[in-house]
Image (cartoon, rainbow, N blue to C red):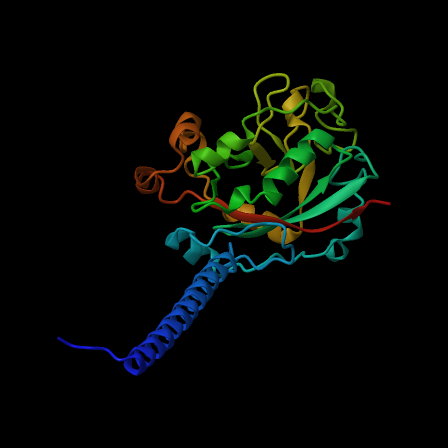
Length: 308
C-alpha cells in the first residue's frame, strides 16, 4: 500500500495546476493562430482582383475585362492595345461637331452628352462617338452593353453578318446567357433623317446613311434589342422609314474605317445563324465551320462631355 503524505499531495497539486495552466495557454495560442490563418486566407480571396485587362489597355475602369479570353482571340488581339482616339480632343472638329456637307446629308441633332467608345476587334481597334441627342434610347442601350462588359466575353461578339459594300451586323454574344440579358426591347427613337425614297440623297448627291453610321437591326416597331449594324458604305436605302435604323452614333477616325475594311465579308448572309447564336452561342463546331469569322472582343467608354 502506497501512502501519500500531505507534503507529497501539495507538490502533486502544484504540478497539476502548472500543467493545467500551460495547457490553457497552449489552447489559447492555438486558437489565436487558427483564427489568424483563417482571416488571412479570406483576405487573400477577397483581395484577389476580379478581372485584369490582358490585351485591352483602356483608361476607363468601369468596364470589367475577362481574363479567360480564348487563346486564338487573344493572339489576334495582342497587336491592338488601344485606340488612337482616347479623348474627345483627339477628334477633328468635323468629327466632334458633324454638320451637313460631303459626309452628312443634313446636320445631325446637336447638344447633349457625347461618349467616345474604344472597341477592339480581331482586325484592330475602332472608335465610336455616341450622340445621345441622335437617338436617346438607342444610345443608352449601347452604352449599357459597353459599361457592363458585354463585349468582353471569352470569344467576344461575332461579326456574324458582314456584306461587302453594305453593312456588318453583330450583337448576339458568343455566350448565350449574355445575349439574354438584353433580350428586352427598347422603344423606338424619332428618326432625325428625312424618310422616303425622295430623300435617299440630297441635292449634292450625299446619301442618307453615311459610311460608319451605327444603328440597330430590327423587324418592326419597338424591336431593338442588342443587335447592331454599322454601314460599310454610303447606303441611301437605310433609315428611310424603318424605325430601328435610326443612327445613334458613328465611327470616327480613319483607323476605324480601316479596321472594318479588313473584317472578313466572305460569309456574307451565310454566317452563323441568328437562332443558333441565340440558343447556344459560338461552339467549337462553329469555330471550325467559320474559321475566318471576326469578333468584337472588348469595348469601353474612354471619354465623354456635353456637346456645345
